[in-house]
Length: 407
Image (cartoon, rainbow, N blue to C red; front, side, top):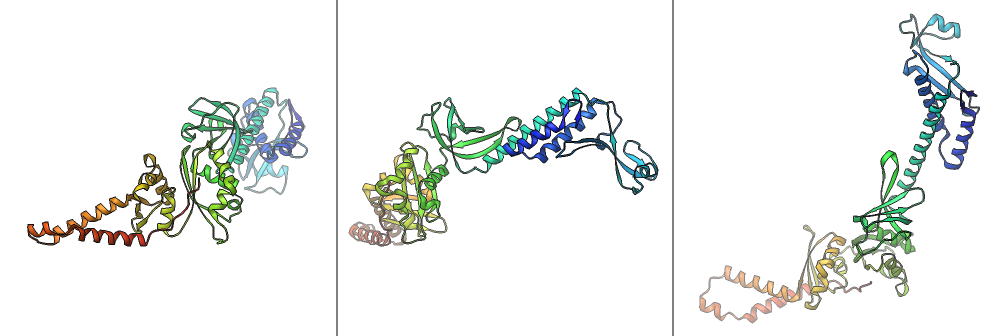
């Protein structure tokens, strides 16, 4: 049916095509068109009909369109715009009773070019909105996944990626500080967030600095992780510099660290290449915090770990020549280990521990014993050192097993 310049049958055919090719619901579009035609009718015709009681229906198959004034059946007419008396209703259909709703068809002469144009504009807008919503939902489902795209813009503060149906935006804080981005480079990124920007346009926030970007790269490169045979327990990261990844397998026949590193380091090297040389320590997670913390401090070797479960605090003793390695440049290694394990870690060298213990013993003797000055002078230091040695040896006997560093 044509009404003015509105070829509804043609619009129905377009809707069928949109639903088939783009997945936009025909029901949604028909409802939008009905709403548009109601607005067009009211805006362009001098009518006293109430805005709430005009209804347009469109047959989804034939495209046949009808405009109705919706009225309630009442015993006596009070508001002719919203009501119809029972007597008049029974002239239309004798089965109507008080409280029923009657649809009285309106047949305006020449719906008009303006009304038609208004309707088309609204339908087009609804189609655009539906497409935006579909794209938003599609990428919202990809939140937490890795996407690839070409760089369209890179001005140092923001990187814009072409992801196909929309743009991905990588703010400065989500970039790897050591990387340089150039237009037309193809890169991967982690979908951090999907937002609705101006006019409802979806916008994807992409990150390469997030720890979960490393986690997803491991899932992509290591089949055992993807299949659930190996679990990533934790990831800590200084983007562009170093990452630590704790892995675990319930299957005793699977070496989680070896599986992630791969033969001759092939698997881990693919991830390092994607991160442009960022170093990666892969360690085996252990339910024993002493062993886990010692492994987290790789590549440093640990002598002993003294843990306080209630405080989640660990005192770590390392050989003198391992102290700087354990702490790392600017404290990086210790900081990453603390993030990885979620424990507070205090690192001391063997010499420092000996000095602390010796000072504590001497202080206790001074506070608890009343001795003469001569006797204090004659107290053999060797005896204190023997006690220190005994304490240190006790700590060493509970030291964690040594673990290998993988980079």
